[in-house]
Image 1 (spheres, helix red, strand yellow):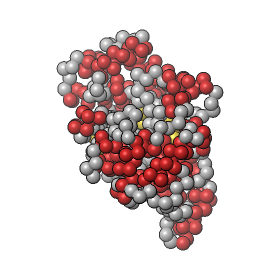
Image 2 (tube, rainbow, N blue to C red; image 1 turned 45 degrees about the vertical axis):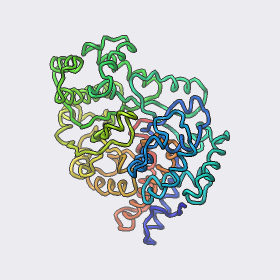
Image 3 (cartoon, rainbow, N blue to C red; image 1 turned 180 degrees about the vertical axis):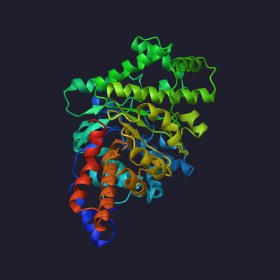
Image 4 (tube, rainbow, N blue to C red; image 1 turned 60 degrees about the vertical axis):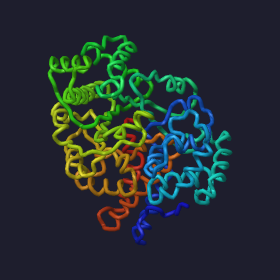
Length: 462
């Protein structure tokens, strides 16, 4: 299923260069500094229950495609814990596997099928049960326990994403277990900084209970956030993550910010008030990062839970988050006027608006010391998206104002496949620069190492 030269250039000169570059990076350790796997998988270290629960249920890339073709999410086991009929779910998936032709999802899945489960025939309705049986059999072996797979994948660091209200029990258990796998939390404050987040007011009060601070007051609220960040840092956290709908920032006076906070807690706020509060909180988070050293990631530009019926039925993160146009230049200016020239602050910007790469993001990151560009993300986490990212940003921001690759996934078994795709695409891009006599090959070898490993290690302080 997998050709050894997949994603490499077809012309012989560039192909040979890409092969040499890839040979130098294909076995490097994996750094996964931003993702959504569960620490409990590794603290409990229990077998994954079945192929459908492992490969379909957590992966919105998979079930959103099936849903788009009229397949009900209920029939895919979404919302079920455990899945009632996992083999039936798998058969539906296999019957429709052709839908993924040409997509990055097919690349990731075929990598897992071939490299992990030694399956060399294509998945289809006819091979569904053979696949299911082979995968199920291997999942019952010690070699396929979560910790064993972590080691097999050569993962050096794996970051989870966690709410400020998360007690991080499983991260503590991992620290105390004696296992050497490095799994760290990431501070995702959306539940307590976004007034449109479900249960926001309750969440803010709960934050106060957990920290012993009076979060009905602005000063107590900020103190509670600082305490929580420190709790995360003690368990290895090196980064924060902010999934705001826009990158709007603000730099309000103490009195104005305090009054705005009281308003969003009073349920009398307007949509403009709530957007202004989110904007102010990005600046507050940047100030805190200057103090405690946490790297700041901003993931704006997603209209989340666009399908209200699916949201009401199944909750968040059900494949209905849709990209929107994003203005970085004007929205980020208040924050950058405050902290943009700080050399000891790192803010990593992501986008779902490709048109902003060359026009806004690369020029911003090519100037402000605190800014770095996150990799092609989500809908652009694909060979074509990765290549366009390099083409649009390198001429202005270079390579060293980017941060390598992160997989941003809940689908644990896709991690090595995703990193393999990123390494191949970067080697293909570098090979073309060498073939065009824009880089020396020794420079390309060094850059391939940077993009696959060293840039992420440095940017995320790993």
